[in-house]
Amino acid sequence: MFDALSDRLSTVFDRLSGRGVLSDKDIDEALREVRVALLEADVALPVVREFIAKAKERATGEAVIRAVKPADQVVKITYDGLVEMLGGDKEPEALNLSLNPPTIIMMAGLQGSGKTTTAGKLALRLQKERKKVLLASLDTRRPAAMEQLATLATQAGVESLPIVAGQAAPDIAKRAMTAAKLQGYDVLILDTAGRTTLDEAMMSEAAEIARIANPHETLLVADSLTGQDAVRTAKAFHERLPLTGLVLTRADGDGRGGAALSMRAVTGLPIKFLGVSEKIDGLDAFDAHRVAGRILG
Ligand code: GDP
Image (tube, rainbow, N blue to C red):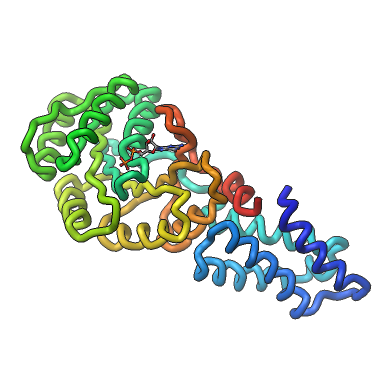
């Protein structure tokens, strides 16, 4: 595993072999390689810096100094550090479902991030857990998005809120909440409008919907292939919405997963799910080990 980083580190330590104890300078040299590996995996620079500072503290410990194969030790320290920074083994996979239904889940994110698809995927997941799910699209600017959600609802075997042309997003939210309550739904998923870029109109509308719906879960859906941009997106949404978790889509793509680490580190929010295909069942619970492995390539 992690051949690329292991090879690099081996080269560093080969140069150093013959000396019994690793000095601070030796560790710095090894961590420079780790730094390059993380930057190549598209981890944001401030996050890389924070990571390296922590790794240095650990690497300065006795374990490395006595290690037979220092390269392996540094890889292990790096891997363990990544897993920890990604939330470790304890990361809450499960959605926070209210004991007093309906649970309201709000989806937020930029247009094209995979928000609507993810709403459908979550609906299917919950439907499989025998929950009665209502999907509602608040994307009043894109009628196609509303129809897309209705189609996804059918695929997932759940209901979608009937579309009423001309109704404003906050009013649709209220109508959806009333319907969910009166008709005994366990979960209401609100799919909000996105934009291609961060803009004030989108943010204030999303913030208003969050105020009205007071969701139990507000999930930011982000494209894991957007790398550094994902961090800006996460920061901007986190400042305006009561986010409770992240969903990273396109984990099936070529990306190295750096965005996951960056977004987790910058927001402190748990990554709850990974989108792993275009299909409606393409949603996996988040696994820190898998993503750490991917980052180390
Ligand atoms: P929205 O504008 O944020 O609602 O984005 P959509 O849900 O319409 O998704 C945009 C495109 O990304 C669609 O073609 C989806 O099929 C695709 N997509 C969404 N999630 C994933 C994923 O996890 N993996 C892959 N490969 N494609 C995805």
